[in-house]
Length: 459
Image (cartoon, rainbow, N blue to C red):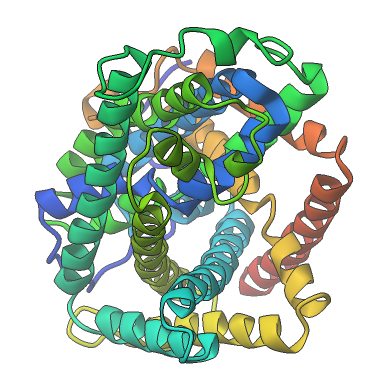
């Protein structure tokens, strides 16, 4: 494929301007480092272990490889052409305005619903410690706090994420060190389990291919938060270098934190232990090793992970909304900046998130459940748009314009697209996942139709 430095035939969407540049390299490095460590890893991974057994290590490795490819593609585009709208801007430029509209607003809804889910989860943990205060009051406190934080200068977001991520990284690192010592039989008071939990209780594949598929789906959705660093990089002093550094170190983080910790867990505790699902795999391991206060210790870490995700999602949603309206894909009122911060976009994103919280109280089994299903497979749709945009972007960039380059282009890009399609196909095999797939498809098609109609009117 020949490359050219010329612009695409269609006029590219203008990149965001006017935002602050208060994020430092240490902020972005820690955001990228902590972005892969979420509540989905600490708690949600238990369902994958229960479904696949020890083979969950392979499931996390396979889905981790897919995430690596997606982040490499996104890193290539974002390092070459930094933009606060990230992949939405790239899709807008390379596929068409309807694509930027679709993937941008889909991601915005995903983040806002995530804010609601994380606020509810965090409130539940704190209410367990302080039962005298109703959970809705804690939700209101968390929502108000992070809304105010993101209304201030962007460096406030960076500082909070820096310390939140530091706690998560310290926790997972300590877990891995203790776990490896226990596996080797070097932890005082414990004996090495050997391969008993890996080969016993049905073997390495105790639930067969169907369990591995379920574990694969659970592992795919446990990865999340990596996209935020390419959004945040646009508000740093050196966006190209910031993205390049973050993406180039993403691979070992995924291997170490996800695959490494899954290997430690299934080696130390039986995969079919009920404690793996509830209270969670990390608590199960710490209890097994006799670590005092393991449950409350992990609750505190999960709380930090939830609050970190809330902060990052409010930030990401506000920047995505600002980017969309700046490109004419939404109400102009949200594009206004105050001190380099899109405060109206912050307020709108928080308002939607709080509305979702209210829906969880008013209609938990209907409207809120529909909302959750609508974003259930959204991350896969986002990844697919990233892959297609990267295929098209490479045609307009020379090697000198690529601080980060996709490996074995275009073969691995096509492989990633095929893998995304395979995961979507596998979702049809499970009734719960099938419902999420259909709801997400409906939302995506509705947004695509709205984006297409909007672009036709503009033309």
